Image (cartoon, one colour):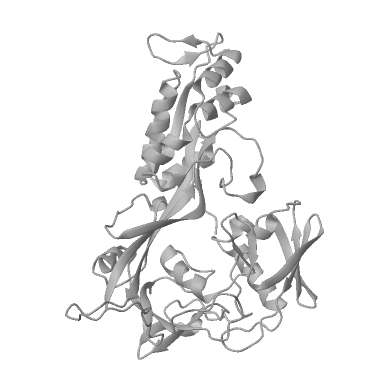
Length: 433
């Protein structure tokens, strides 16, 4: 039996996103000395491990305490959400059976009957409400739940979610993992298997002879039933050791994120999937020269998002001029700024706002009041891709006689500079579940 290593890279929206995922799937191979030919499909022994995943022992497997993507990949196998998100970002019911907007700012979700957790206990609306409270407190899930103020069980398997502001697309944010109520009471000890909350997902965690495994949940109610009876886990104490294990074929899936500032190409077969991280150019509208909307629009028109995606992120990005992935069903048929640059229109906008003068000495554009287009661009210097994006933008705006001074900071100093308003532009990223 051999193993064909595959690399899966996730495409993010651009101005952009990218993570990558690598897997190894077992295949049956023919005996090289055999002359017999067959077209029969390979037989998979379901009692064998389908593959091996990395488990970071120093991180938690409680989905609301996990700090890194390594264990979060495992948690997605262990815990079901109310909804998953399709390729067009429409919500796909998992624990939920249906939903309705009983008011523009109220969502009522009905859960499927007869659902059970992996310990055999019933999954109820109370468990969903309990999980929602945890999600609202967590660093990872709380950003996407900011507009949802409350969840309550109104009986008959229904959960009522109250919104701060009406939003017809809010259901897509109900993708937090559901755990059994109070099953996380010992979750402070991440190294203890008894501290792992109970879920209803495709697999559950079990320890055998001192080794953790993911065991298939054969009682799961849903459209996706696991093929393999168990998944092996290879525990490590540092994320840095994961790449070495992957290179040695000791683990079969490896996730990278361009958000971490580096990306390693592998020679194996690769494919890509979209994620929902958004890398963007932030503008400080309190800055005098950027307070004018036409100037901000001119900057947007000058930047060629396709070029940024291709050159700064090695082609692993989907360019967009909105805050949404271009596949999002909610923007179909809408008109928005093209992802290609339109320098001619941008220059006309700048001239309309008085920035028609160009310094022959310093090369910046200025108006009759002496206001000049010389901008500070903040970037986290620890991320090489965002540094490349900053330089790309610097070169692009220079062609329109806009001077950009790049300010490279370590992450903590970068965050402090943004909070203090010590910038004109900055390269930011929104990470969604």
